[in-house]
Image 1 (cartoon, rainbow, N blue to C red):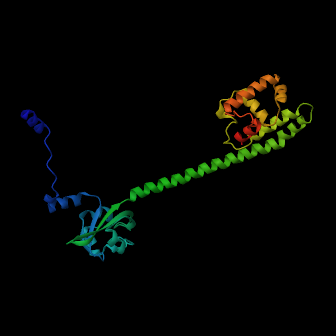
Image 2 (image 1 turned 45 degrees about the vertical axis):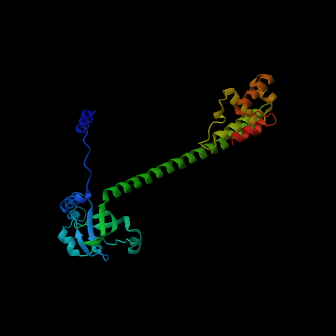
Image 3 (image 1 turned 180 degrees about the vertical axis):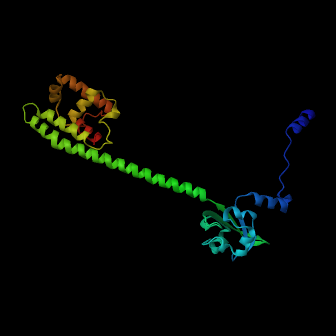
Length: 275
């Protein structure tokens, strides 16, 4: 058993515990030199006490040029972190600022401010360049706006088409139907045609009547007739079938629609579904 345990220890050695207390100043310097964020230490008034070497990547200035500016507020114009709020919270994160670097380029940066309480200074500032991210966000917002404009234009066009179709039906088709309705035995047919036209010229997004109830084409036809107020005898006459057949189809429709109570008026119920 001892040999097996020994072999496992050799094959899977336990990692040594990380000791932060053994970190040297040289290691801190190496870390600071290899991060992309710019780091500053200042007193409570913003006077610079420490400037990280990589400030040149964001600000374009050397450490010496930055130090000669003496105060962080001369480097980051308009930086407002609220000293009272900082004292209460200990850290203020994600302050968005705009700066102009040495070469006249406008850069967007994200600043974090923290109470540091160390010999070199009281406040620790870290600055991250988010210019590229802001550019992408701006471009996405522009494309979003353009897309919304296209969608709105399509919707307006759909409404215009619907209104145009409805107007043409009212001016051209409905008068013809009214003429047909004046003839013997054609009133019911005219009424049915008007009901169908009203649906066709309604909202383009409207669903086909009774589409969710698995009705057959003939059952849908009868539903439309019932909804217009036609009796079983009138429906049978128009479809050239017997009233008994229409009654059977009415029962099938009630079953599919879930209307089990015979006291419920089927025409009224269909009108609610189709409204």
